[in-house]
Length: 201
Image (cartoon, rainbow, N blue to C red; front, side, top):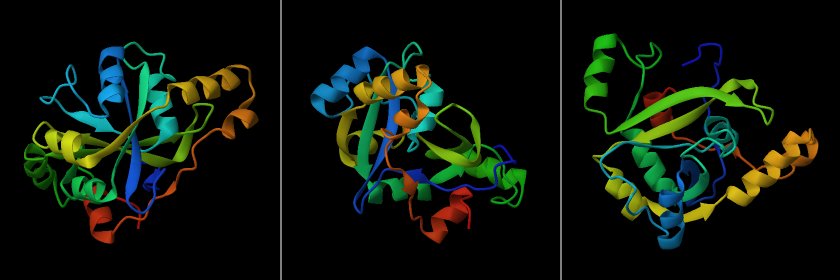
């Protein structure tokens, strides 16, 4: 984690019952997910899948859907209850002193982790690092079936929106582009979960 970023807050597009997280896949996986409204083969149940509630961080990661194998930007609406369940099982990807008493404690928990959490510097629409961090959550093969079959409510195709915003950015029309951004706000997180994931007090 970047120690310069001392704000660790979950910002997302959410409502009382659900939260949208983003994933980027190649065509074969993306098309099937949209068609069936569920992740089906060639999506793999045997590897970790990472979900991210920050749209702009997903744009940074996928280069606005231009990276090979990340052309399909999907918005996955999942249950808020499931989101919090995942966070309760999480272990950070590094032994942060503000969460763990020792490296040994972290290692013991990490070796058994079914969910991993990593904080990365949030990005502006221009791709610049901001002074707060964005969360990404890794769902392991041990519980990925729950994510696919029980947690997911809807899978949305965000490619048209991504192309529209990126086109405006390429023309330098950032003010216009910002108007199309999703209204992400700080997602209320119970204090016990904040303690687990290293969230800001």
